[in-house]
Picture (tube, rainbow, N blue to C red):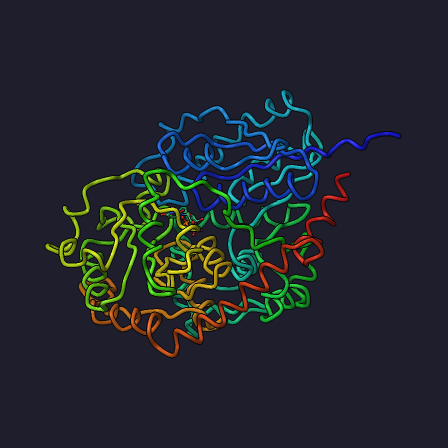
Length: 476
Ligand code: UDP
């Protein structure tokens, strides 16, 4: 009897933990659940301790091989003052260049699955006749906006932020407030806008788009129906969408140096601790960090607080070097804060084992920047959210969670010296609301339902499992 050989595919994430993690989890799932042999091609970012630790510690199945792409020399193309999207896009463009020679070294894959920022791979793959799929790492709502962007670009004359209605209508979605748009869509003359347009327009070149979400979650909203039924989307040569999530980091070993966090949680009551973490890159201004810290203290709730040195100019200061930046928190937290909160809170510099903290029974709330991975992780563990978006599409996610899904609360900021600041009293209010209030209970129950439905989708025979099986079949 002939033995069927496993199909070989390659996966190409873009740099940044929020992209690396879901694509590696996707690759692991292909290898462990769907009998696929995977080459995982990584852009080396030596400056990211979190990336190094994750790739070294993630238990990799024998059918998954990590291949490091030769480091790209970007010293003459990237300057420190560029916006994050420009830097990232240029780094991706340079890093993808050796893809053809990598294909010549490994056996040619049946398909390449790329992160949305890696679109330069389309041209290279054409020469090798390799179909390219996109793995979209954010919410369907952002995907709908990206697919609609070309039309908006043609039809809206002014800046999007100046449209009279104050919101952008995307078919099938609840309108998106212009204030929620990512910064790269707020100035159409800027270079970052052009990059955004380029990445968005390449989405339609994919053979299929994997989305990190699941049917049951989407069926409660109209986004997918909108995408399928709206005449604009129907007439677009839009690729099929496959809902294969929620794929989250789940079996990372806890570093010895982080074990104290989990031991501390072991001694706390169920649902009594608020976890505060702003993703891999998020940073706050010094003033905002102080207000947050003092508000936490005033709330008298238990907390685990991941802190980073504040920056008054950059909201994503550690995007490319996550897990670094280990300045002593004493030098930037309010005076006496650490002493006064001893026993009540745990301050963790730069990086914590997030999924382990969210999965711990003591954790009852999550103050999060609403990156899509953090959002999915919170759903997978049933933890309600205090939405604190910082950059990229996080404001869209925050509104989605607050106004449409009903699992989050968003603190109100006040304008001060041209900046929006959330004052300590407001921090205290929302922390108490989530940790002690009736509203918090309702959100926790709703999260509990999502947790169950997410687990069901990923099981053998579940919607996300079947959706991925269907694509894998086409590779065999
Ligand atoms: N993360 C972590 N520890 C931290 C901060 C972040 O493990 O202290 C992980 C988190 O679990 C998530 C990812 O880093 O999987 C961040 O992705 P997300 O999409 O939430 O935000 P981004 O970092 O892209 O802004």
